[in-house]
Length: 306
Image 1 (cartoon, rainbow, N blue to C red):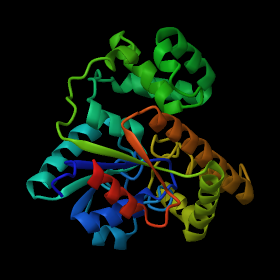
Image 2 (image 1 turned 30 degrees about the vertical axis):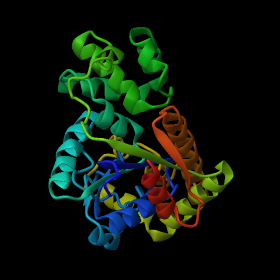
Image 3 (image 1 turned 45 degrees about the vertical axis):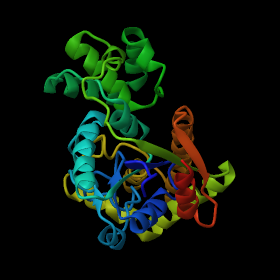
Image 4 (image 1 turned 90 degrees about the vertical axis):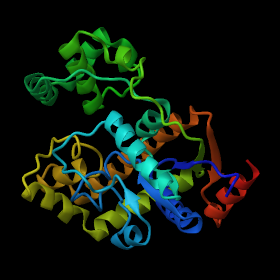
């Protein structure tokens, strides 16, 4: 393993097989997995986030997964700090850290550094969230005025990032995009190899559709109902996204079960497209065909030639 990097990164769109490949690599090269998934961090959200199974996590050690409650916020900056500490510990124990996930902002924060953010007063956050419930388009228009650079990077329907841009501006008078241009959280100082898994679009979409059906069969509706029974509001950042949003709409009688499934599939396909656009823009990634019969072996062969 003398030619191997200090860290492996396995990224790509949702449903591309990252979890399976990451676990196989970890078992073959004595590694441990650091999850870079913005929703697998949350407890009680197993089916809708496609977490590794209990058996998979028992066979291979996973970090930064299933460790905070859904009503807690967690940022890319926090991930960068937490992941850096975990990676240092893994390396000290002589093992290989394998960062696995599709959260591009998390991965970028870890390896490129992260800029500081102002403390947001509770009342500012609460007020903006309330305004967002009433009229999100108006908030996006306001964001375009105060921080056009950030607004251009996000979707006009991305509630969480619209609110983030506005709360930073209102709390500090400074656009979020300006904060992102400085990097007080330094990038991690270890050599990394970046591997991305790709599939032909129609094949990936078929995988996404099939996985959504499997989630329904495995109890996604019951999981969403359980989250509500635990007292978690459905407009929390953790829950107000595809996967759970559609189920809550069904549970509230706002849509049919078939339509909820179709909306979940469509939302996931759109998310996968955004992920691919993000990762394709990062020239550090070497792309591996996810349909290869033995992706882990293909990755190991590539690493041996680096």
